[in-house]
Image 1 (cartoon, rainbow, N blue to C red):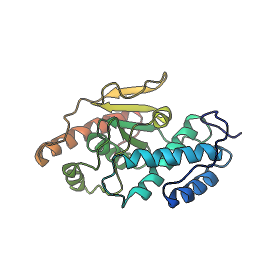
Image 2: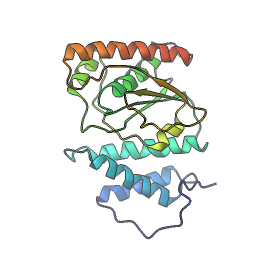
Image 3: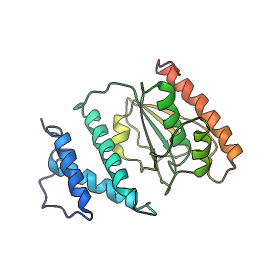
Image 4: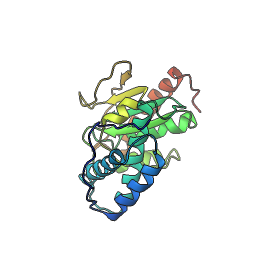
Length: 220
């Protein structure tokens, strides 16, 4: 059964500001055939592009990031609707800018779980790029941050999460019954020295290890 996320009637053909967005919509419509109709896929592609464009300082990586963001959102929505199986625990990390704490938590969780936890991260007010000090201290651990980027918080990724971990984002994260929420009190790495950010990273790692144990996943 095709899921229409909006329940709206078909709209006139949409205008694409970039040609690659039409190709992306074609690819995702094929990937999610039988789950979402074409209108829903197009709307998600264009919304994802517009959201990332608002914080983009350069467009060099915008195509790749839009592909990743739109795919993640559609996958999350499909999981929340029960149209795609959930193989591993789903954890969402949220902070204000999605350029530091939540990014470190997501990458550390993926690494320490050995891929046995699926992670997403988002920001209530996403920054333009990752905090350079955060990238530096994560690289010290041999963890590659090159594919990560700040993403806005969307309702679909919250719906798909089993656990939502917030870090100083206030009341921006919507609350859903049955979801498990945690709030980690961590210093914001914005404007801090590398030494200070290194300490924040170590605190994040300790929190992640405790989270994994609560999910019955043995940390690496």
